[in-house]
Image (cartoon, rainbow, N blue to C red; front, top):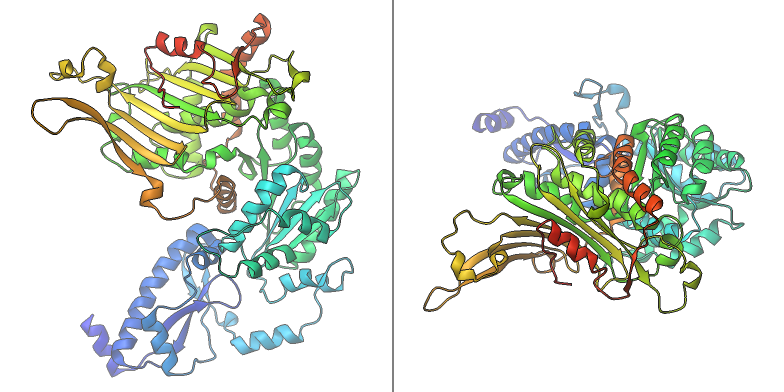
Length: 627
């Protein structure tokens, strides 16, 4: 390095600094006279290191790199580069970095532009197509102006934009991503439904649910206004074919001649899914970039209906375009499954039948606000919660180590677990239904659709043979609870066994991953009570997120929407996963229908059906009673 500094002082060469490019989400090394030989050598060294890092990041993330840098607040230059820049005026020649197909970074003389020239050209160019089209508002044309054709645009359409899901979850998540810098500033947000409203009408509908994060409120009003100005409404009318054509036209006006990427969030009931998706495939997809569609659960009513929907979708879309979303999988609890296991040497060797006695997956909600429409109707908790959230949690927990963190590699391992789940016998599951005492759901009293489900599952492979996976999920119970509880086997020949008394379960080590009531990782271990004598106690080593991390946890929709934007599919069900999950549940549903099983009633705010405790005891498991 000393030789580099000496060479720099002997022959003054330009030092380099990075600054955001005017033509896209890239970085430009700007040549400028050095303030000193020391500063120049540092500038060159840092530039080389930054270039290598940028090449790697650009290869992975492409145009999305800039939004990640903006989110981290990296718009500013490092101090040592900025100091060198301020000593002299910048030159007017910029070397543009471009990532080619071979993964190399090269400079192109044809791309060398002066910043003032770019600004002047943008002022003297004629009106763009979006400016001359009469239905387009001024703010639409301003979105596309000032951006080079080299920067891909992004449009996000929310189908069913005036529904409750879109208003309360999807649009707030999109705004949170926009506010945090994870969406490009030129993004176009489109609402699509059959209500007769205008752009301003949609903006007023969604504005009430848009809030900024508690931990950063800077420029909240400005960001909110910017987001709303980039939000537009498309009236679907009575024919989705014509409606999708109008949506495509409006998006094209925003995109101009640039490369264009589009995301379509289908916030519609399953009954209307194909009525929307098929015209969308034919009339609203861009040919200038990628298209991705997001589909809400439940994924079919039966295995057969789900298969038909899947085949219809795959006739129009590629598998890699389809993202089946379950917001419960966007929790940190789910991500921590793989992080805790594969990044900590202490856990991976224990993750098998050799050391784990049983696994409990628990999900409950105390509120029953959704029961009237969803559970006492047709789908019930098996199709809505168990098919996606519960089985996906088990698959992520029990899968073999994937080749990489690539979404397809993880999905390959998940589907192996789902295919290995043993057929569930009639005596190995329990149904429950919330007993209504308010009089609000009297019309559903004859329904047998369950609002509670407990079962014992077994995975027939070498790693998990004989280990019961107990699942328990219900609505209207004592409290909101979401956790995975891993109980380890007893210590063979435990010489301290008599110190625990007659209840040998007291000496069981447990690992608990909890999302509700408060996020935590708990490890139950045995220790000596301080003082004279030898008395043992079971204590918990606690990692409470609220104590360790002073930050607001993003909503799960934000997490999953960002994954869609990044093309990360590991938390979304692939078609073969959907089919494998239905193969697990279809025999259960057939048993319920053929035997006309009546669910056990339970009171609101209760623990749920008593038979669930008998079920656990049958498989040698004690439910945790910490409700």
